[in-house]
Image 1 (cartoon, rainbow, N blue to C red):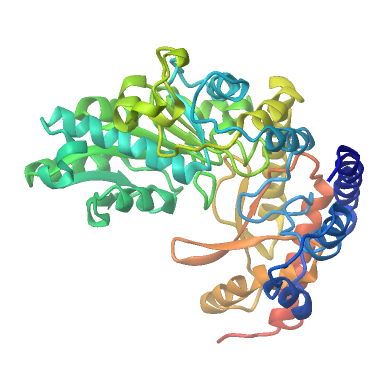
Image 2: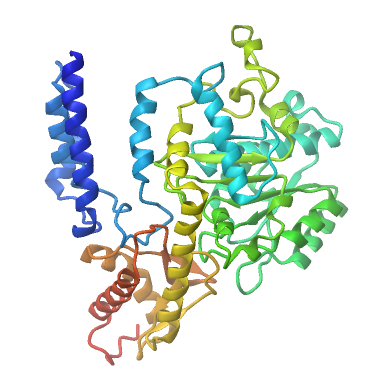
Length: 482
């Protein structure tokens, strides 16, 4: 392959990507792949001989890009998956061309990562000592990093070197979550050997926020039983309804009880940038750690999470293990990023973060967040005003939890319809919404992350819910009790 071959193919790839992004709003949000197309990808044979770049691009354009997940479309309201920022898409190409390991050393990606981690901390108002954070694959990995640091602090305070002795040398270590806490916390708990039975689910209030009284009672009960309470997880926007926990009183309790306060801000932490809802985040800056995803609300191309930890030495002391061949005094007092997490070879994530933020600036990022939260509140108003729809929780961030509730259906029928509605809506191709279960009932859950989404798009979402709902229940007024 010559340099000219690559230049020609790169220009063609840029056109392919630009055409794809241009065409997204006018095409179905998502459609099932035809069986033959799916099988063609599954059965791809390992080639004996290489193919030219133009042939590879042809395959990408004809077999891959016509079957997207749908999250680039402004009418995608499913899960918490964003459209990629174009600046981040461009930066990804340059990062891949450099292809360094961002474990450490003296090269641009290492220093840029320290800068963008600081930017992220500044955006959400989290105190950031140098070395107090790193980029990860996502909040799942960031949570492992943060919980591990919390575990090591608690063990050291109990007089145990958990890295040497393991958790078996300690009484059962207990953490506290609500039923709305993301499953990545339990995964981290299990992987760190803490045992899921010791991750206690405490009560939440009617709007999904952690109940302080229930937390205090659980901590007292565990101490009396000889267990070791050490961590509480608060949410900066739950995945079900977008509820934000009361950080200040939780931080007060955590301080009194010697608990590490970890905030799961994967999706919602950036909501603090919207002046209309910023008051809900009061006290988030008091946490010991915060895990969040630039690849969600910021639109950084996947993958990119971030762990922010208040105590730099606590984080480094949890993971630092430097073989002699990696000692590098030139790295300075902070050492390598690989001393702060589990990864040794680390991808160049910081360039796409830098580009995604720098292209808009703080003001632009904040405007995008405020647009989606305002539009979510508008969707909540439309749902609340509709006799055949029911709003299930206050709209606190940019998630709207609601359900279709036409006349003539009993509770079981409403649950059945709302369980079937997400797929029925998705198959129509005009919008994409997902479902969940809240307080034992099926619901629809619309998440707004795309700054190009309009009120017309959210009105279309409700039109499609009604149309699909009527197909599932029959003509209006028909009694379909099960």
